[in-house]
Length: 356
Image (cartoon, rainbow, N blue to C red; front, side, top):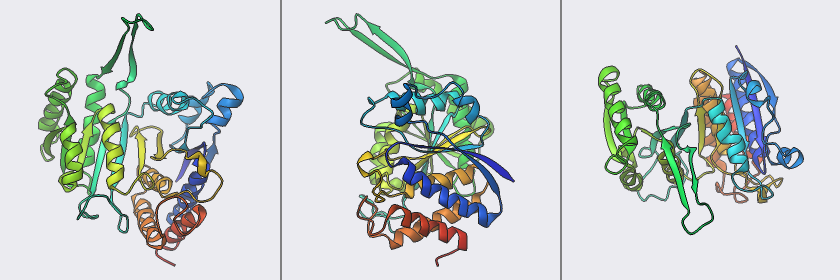
């Protein structure tokens, strides 16, 4: 079976880590017997600085023809903050209706966590973040801008359709054989009474009607932030809105070892979805072959799982664990090997079905 893969290497070290993710993806394709066509796109800072556009008008229609997108990173010191993020990332999430941001949070063997006395058996959960609504719709405006009486309003937009489809994705994910059938709603029902009344009612109505086998619980977002550090083993699958999901997944990345190993997916279960490492473009390391590519390799592994190649995704994770055992550190410039060396180790493990 052939797949159509789009690649947006992006800025800074994005092309370097994307290259290693693709190297591992190709090893998986060769070993597990599937084919794919790859199309590269130059969306990012260089194109914006050259043309003044973040995306051409044809971008969405072209990407829609693909099964998945592998993204490196966007961001450059010569481009004002927010231009590329809004013009590429947030725009594509909405235009492609990628309504779930999926963040596996798993501490791999050999990776240090700042939480004392916790190990891989304790840190293994998934955050399902609503990805197209909430505060990120940029609904609101100014009154008397630039005056002493200025008013700024930013509204959180939550639709029943948007909330329900995110919740159903999370319930289904909790049913996966590699999860434990527990789903936690993360919100703020005691203060944000309108939006979270909708989330709370939908969560319980859907659970009662269609997912009685999934164990449900609830926690305020501030409590979850505390419990991530105290008892991460309590969590299996967490579902939340766009803003809270953005915040808690960065904290979660640190307890799984940092952004160097954290990857995420922007998912529409039946359409083109986009996978990316959680770290930024790190332009100061560009071209030095010192950046850690494991997060981009993990993103390629998530893409394999999305493409219904779970056996290949499992091998990618095993290959990452093997590479970690050979690295001196996960920090850029301190790995004891180059970016391409790490990719070679994982790709060889996947290709050969074990350590060489």
